[in-house]
Length: 218
Image (cartoon, rainbow, N blue to C red; front, side, top):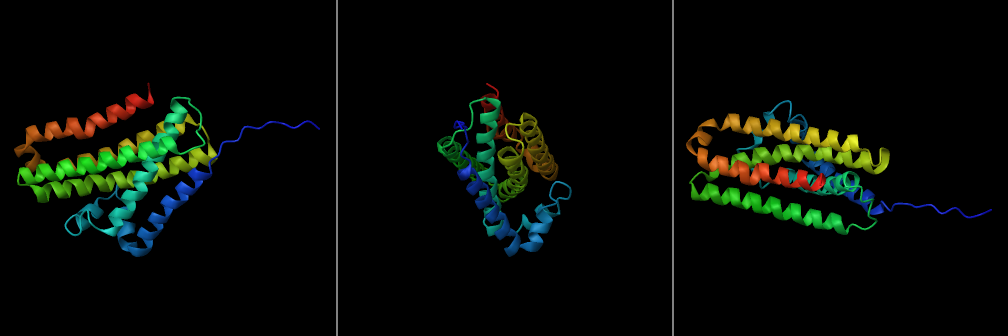
């Protein structure tokens, strides 16, 4: 009997990462069950943002848990998507994932800091804080889509390009719903700061999507 050489991809670290991120959802659900129920229907009913954007806002454990969950899965989704779309193969080591995760963390922290700083400068810190909370809530919800896509791409339909594109479409759809809802609820504020809003939209909303899209499709 001749030995057969098989090439196996080491996904142990991805498995650990996916289930570790799920622990944050479990903690959020167990500690804030009623809030979790309102959050899980967010794209279909914006009751969640109206109930919780006045209290705690960004500094609360439920929001922190889901932000961590979303950031981990966002970085992992970009890692898996670029492996598939750029056809570079699956790296056995998480080096590139760690770089992507560090970039995402830096970008999110810098973006929130700039938004809060602008709110302080323009004397609209309260409104800006509400806008950040609403947009982050929808981004955190899209983390659920990223999680499902990561599970599918890692264990069910490996290298399935249509899963990547479907996930990207759903992520953009959820965040588009959040953006439209936020803009509709703050029409007066946007009208009085229209020039600032255009600069913000181009610099912090559109340009990141263009950069990520260009990177994945190069």
